[in-house]
Image 1 (cartoon, rainbow, N blue to C red):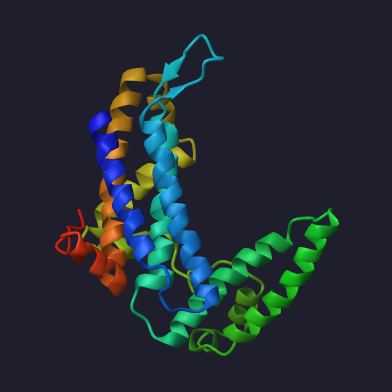
Image 2 (image 1 turned 180 degrees about the vertical axis):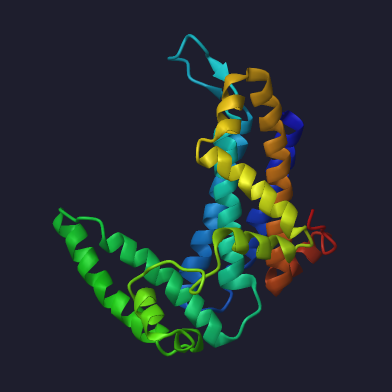
Length: 262
């Protein structure tokens, strides 16, 4: 476990360093906010997986003071992979400005509409929701000007503005993930199978229940999870460097310009 913990720690350090190289890069405040949030989420998920890889110990629980929790590790890996795929779709894929505008606005619109559905009882939360209604209307006005929106029929346009999810508006999570990893040279079919495996953990499927039962399998599975996460963080790091010159310049500076994506 310790060897793969070190591999993941090294991968996370490099990821952190290339993210720092992006600081000050010219982009809109809106895009910077989203990009920073997605990159931060990848880093935090990676560090949480690292911590679980060292095993969990709760002194107050005497019956099992130390245990391996590969189930939670795989749930977090799934979240990390999904975040990387969303990052790729919003920022790393090469698209024109109109398409980028559509993707960013739709991503933001759906998130804010979900938050509008939560009943706000505190005055400050009510005020926040009210302020976000103005942002939502502005996002809708921006979306209707995009070519992607104009390609939809009237019913689809209304569904999109209502915040509904559809493959017509944005690819499915599985497709986003396949697209991201295909850009790194990985087999889309293999990635789809791996995502299905990770989803079994997130949805409390049979495999996750079976492995929870066996301490030895939990430890071995956790060790594999650490190694796989190190590889995926490396893929994400290299993909970012290919798209943003400050990141690639940093890799060249530290002698890693030929850093592999696997």
